[in-house]
Image (cartoon, rainbow, N blue to C red; front, side, top):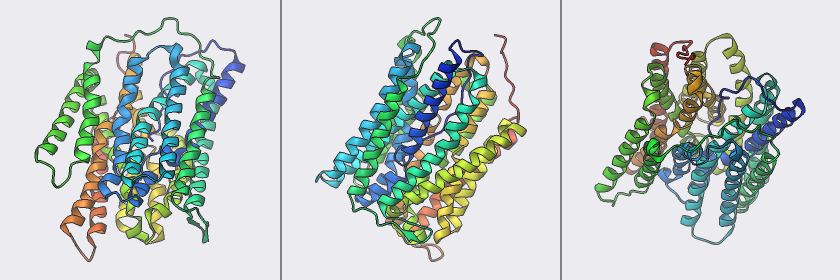
Amino acid sequence: MPERTESAAPPACTLDPVVQRRNMILFACCTGLQYLAAPMLYVGITQAGLCEYLGANRRISNLPATLFFAMTAVPALIAWVSPKVSALRRNLAICYAIAGVAQMLLAVALALPIAPAWKIGLVILQGGVSGAVMPAAIALLWEVIGRGTDEKRRGSALGLAFGAGPVLAVVGSLGQSVLLGESWFGYKFAGVEFPTKYVVLFGCGGPAMFLAAALSQFFVIPPASKEAEREPITRVLGLLLGVPSMFASVMVLQFQSSESSWLVPIAGYSLAALAAVALIRHFTPILRQRVLLLATAVTILVYAGNTIPSNMNLYTESAIGEKSTDVAGKQNALRFGFKVMAGTALGWMLSRTSPRAGILATSTLFLAAQVWALCVTGPWYLLAFGVYGAGELIGVYAPNYMACASRTGDLRRNMAFSTMLMVPASPMGYVFGSIVDLSRHQGWTIAGMNPDTLGFRISFLLCAVLILAGMIVTITCLPAHPHKTGDAE
């Protein structure tokens, strides 16, 4: 799931310092629980391996992650449906609870003697539900802490949440390794038989989200001086049309087959074009600003890297000779372990350089992960997941650049827009999976590589090219320190 940056907050909070401290602790606790459940909530690696084990092809195995990112536009709809400050705690609890229910339903389904196709469908559903509610929960959590604390007091909460948080993700990943029977530093865990290991894994994720929902009710939020009213439908028609069209496009394209009519892909691409036009129309005020338009293009190009981990996981058997389901915990542990180290280093770097440097540094890490996956096999291949995890912090530094380029009065709208930029990037997950299936179907071979290996490496190369294109635009077109204009308005 993508990380978020903090948006603008009032300069002072009217709450008592003791109450503010409680809000900061609750913020850290909720964030920590999200990280603890990260192996299930960061949809991609775990779900791809599970789908493949259940008999899905590479394209379908990429669908949970593709749908996750396609659904990240839903938070904008939630913000429109329920814009009042007084509903923040309720909405936050609902989002966490829905995420927990989705994981528990999947755990129950995996335990039942039902057809694998139904189980695959529920894995996909869990990915889509997580994509809809978890980014919304993160956005609401930021607004809660923004309203419920002074900015000057917030550093300790952020340090605890995003310092200890990824450590909890490593703990969760280690638990996943124990269940899946993976080996660590020469020691192999006994593991648990299928499907029990996945039943326990997702069964533990549910209670973590229920606990976060309960804790969210203890936040204290100052009442707004004037509650926001829901905008009329005429103001959000582009959003209301674009989001379902994007969802429908992903589903139509994903479930087409070789026997499908030629009209099916045309319908899928037409829906994608309709979604793009509608969403561009809705966010035209942002895209008219040159720096924000360029930053949007860069973010979409580099965010293609967010859709590749499913293929990286599925390539494991070719790269190191182990099944993708047997190393998912180790991959997640490396992913979040490197994120702990990179988060500290990148924060220090940002304080001494520029917002653009944050985009370039994280993009370079993303690119390095793809180059490593292209070139390295054997046990060292797994290091690609660590470098990839550090590069995922592009989800912090790309929105940070957009925040720095935004006028004060536009921050809330622009940051909401930044959460949706995974939507136009999400179809790349479908493309990456399709490349592998096409290579297998056509029997492509080059330099002694079998069709599967070649297909995966082509997908890594394409991902690297997109990231590199984003870096070139960043270097040549984006100013290091974007200027805010119109703050006096």
